Every structure is written in structure tokens, then in C-alpha cells.
Amino acid sequence: SQTIHQWPATLVQPVGSPLSLECTVEGTSNPNLYWYRQAAGRGLQLLFYSVGIGQISSEVPQNLSASRPQDRQFILSSKKLLLSDSGFYLCAFLSGDRGHTSNQPQHFGDGTRLSIL
Amino acid sequence: AQSVAQPEDQVNVAEGNPLTVKCTYSVSGNPYLFWYVQYPNRGLQFLLKYITGDNLVKGSYGFEAEFNKSQTSFHLKKPSALVSDSALYFCAVRDMSRDSSYKLIFGSGTRLLVRP
Image 1 (tube, each protein chain N blue to C red):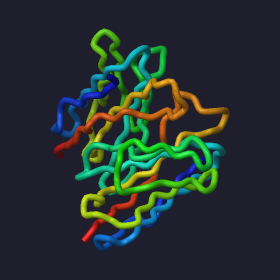
Image 2 (spheres, each protein chain N blue to C red):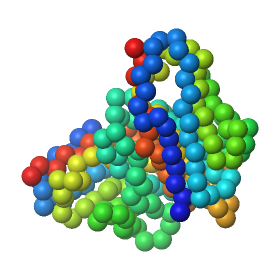
Image 3 (cartoon, rainbow over the protein chains, first blue to last red):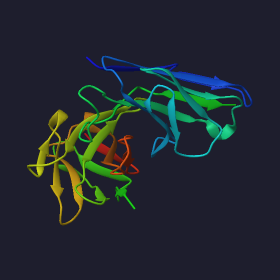
């Protein structure tokens, strides 16, 4: 079966510290991968997506970056966190089995709640 | 521009009563539509999708959704609400840009509160 894992579940970091959030997918090859941020338990903002190893597209200018060092690994990073980086970060994947198709749903991990002090 | 609207921030319903969570969309061409549910401190869970075919789509946990092309709507419904259905619900439409991203455009979410 296809699964997605995010860690850590919660993180408290001081302003100016670095960040690394990791997301891994199992049970599928060549997935599309996505990082979202959710503020105040409401709308989702797409931050980055990746259609292959080393291929990263940024949706909004910001203090964060993403990398995809392996097929099923997606990392969200920052060199210096800002207060505005607080939020709930969600990773999602679109299965690559039988090729990507528009009618497949994205599947989400359980998220990382990031608090900046 | 492609967009999804969920006009209600919150929907309140008594347990046992039918519920409807509204969604309207704007895309070019035929839409691919999705509903997700989110419980506190959890990720989004896929409920159902409309791609083509029957306008009434059945999904998980007794939920269904009705696609209406003329009204560009995809409302989520359940005949009898449960207290455990209380959660945040998101409607989404596939971004039909001609790339390989298969991004989703999400509505702002509707909080469903089911009273005992």
C-alpha cells in the first residue's frame, strides 16, 4: 500500500534558527510531491511541488526552500526562520504508478506543526 | 482564472439531520473535483472525486456529492449527520494547466459542527 510519513509532528524553534522538515513516500515510484502550509486551521497554500528528483517548483516567494534528493523524499528547509513561518506544514503525493493522471487524488501526510518563538 | 469557492465558513447541523456543504468552481473545460476532510491536527483525508459520468458520486463514511455543470457546483451531502462528522471540509479542483504538476486548487474550507 502507498503511505506517506512526515516528521517531526511538532516543532518549536527560535527565530533565526534553521529548519528541516522531512517527508517520505512508500509504495509508489516517481510520485509528484507537494509542500503546503496551512495557517490558523483554514486554507491551504501550495509552497513547492516536484515532478522528479532534483526538480523543484516554487509557488510563492518566501523564506523557505525545498529539495528532493531521492525519488520518494521531499525536504522543506530554511536557513533562518521568521515568526511568519509558523504554521501547519503538510506534505502530499500523487501516485506515479501507471503514470500520473489528472483523476487521481493527492494523499496527505499528518503534518508538522511549527511554532516559532 | 481557475478558482474554488466555499461560501460558508461554518455549517451547523443536528445529529441525524441531513447536511450539505457547498462548493462552486470556475475552470476552463471539464472539471476534476475532489472533497477532503481534515480532523484536528491531522492531514487531509480524501473523501470522493468527480471525474466524469454519473453526477452523483458516492464516497467514504456515507458522504456523497452532486455535480451540477450548469450551476458549476459540487456540493457535499450526507443523509444523516453524525457528531463524529464534525471537522473541516475542503473542496478542490484540478488545475488544468498544461504541465505535469497536477496541482489542486483548494477552497477556503468549511467547518462542520454536528450537535448531539
